Length: 79
Image (cartoon, rainbow, N blue to C red; front, side):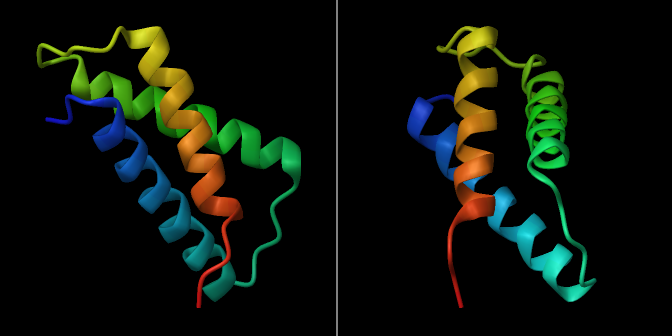
């Protein structure tokens, strides 16, 4: 499982980009409020899955890192 802050950020960023791509394909428009909820939900599921393993970063720190990186990935521009 992901142990370092950088690994958590990379995984969440990539997931954000993937989600944005799916929304584009489905022609969905997501409001800022819905996007914030989506990022929080993603962080919640991510933390639930990773709590089965010993981690270096505390859970509340991972949640913030994860949600922020997901949002950055979703808001990024890519081809």
